[in-house]
Amino acid sequence: MKVLIMAGGYATRLWPITKARPKPLLPVGDRYIIDYILEKTRDLGLEVYVSTNKFFEKHFRDWAEKNNAELIVEETMSEEEKLGTMGAIKYAVSELGVDDYLIVAGDNLFSFSLQDFLRRYTGKPLIAVYDVGDFELAKRYGVVLLEGDRVIDLQEKPLQPKSTLISTGVYAFPGDVMGKVEEYLENGNRDSPGYFIEWLLKKGVEIHAYRFDDYWYDIGSADSYLGAMKTLLKESKIEEIQISPYSKIIPPVVIKKGAKILGRSIVGPYAYIGENCVIENSDVSDSIIFNTTVIKGSTIWRSIIDEKCEIRNLELKKSLVGGHAKIQRGD
Image 1 (cartoon, rainbow, N blue to C red):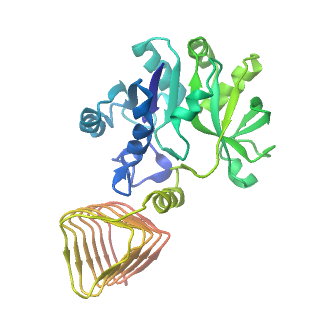
Image 2: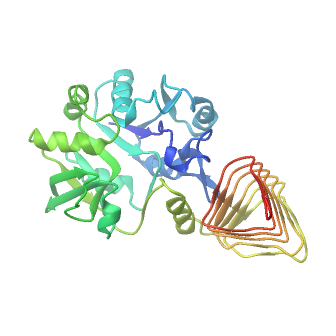
Image 3: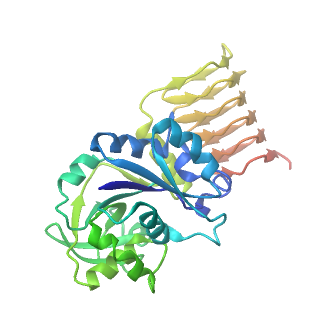
């Protein structure tokens, strides 16, 4: 069996912060999203490959070398050219050969152990499922019906979900199923594996489910990204920074080197402050601030602000600000 982490999407739902930055390399606490996934693969004793695209290859290259992961790079440079998840799986199999595969979406954070997941794998397709508890939310995903642990129905993004149990982006597929990907792609949807599972069910393939509780985050929106940070950021990590004696840090936070916390500022809880940021006479909580951003006289809550921005004399709530923006009251 091989492990294939899918990290080749262009993450348009999180633009502008992911326009020049791959979503799996967004920070969650003091690590990247993909680091949490890779950590869960360490005890499996399997070869790990990361599927990405030519546009983001340079971002992943250093990370892959440091983490002993191999890259599979599709030759696409834009959203318009992308192969889609199933197209990327086909490309990876053409490079690595037909085998059993553990496939994990590179933008999903989940509570369960991959070791436990594979203990349930018997050579028949196995998918991880989670109850999102909300029919409106379920419309965004592949909705699953079970008899015991057997999948009897899966509908991708249904208008009227039959349940709130959804497929989460973790799959174990045997070699014979991986060998069907090319046939599926002759007429099938290239983007979502949910459609592939629908197709397999119609072909009479027996598919089983691994059900888990606790947490699962599909990092596809600012809310899910910030929610994941609140769940996974357990303790503070503060590097070499400058802090005013009149400022206060409320844990947990991550504050990267070179940051300056000046004046009467309050940072935290649940704040990520990137390298060389300046926070002056401002309150920042439940937010992610990327490198070299300046925030003065402002209150930032449940917001994501990209690098090299300037925010002055503002109250920002539930906002997503693209890189190099300059915003102040009166503009």
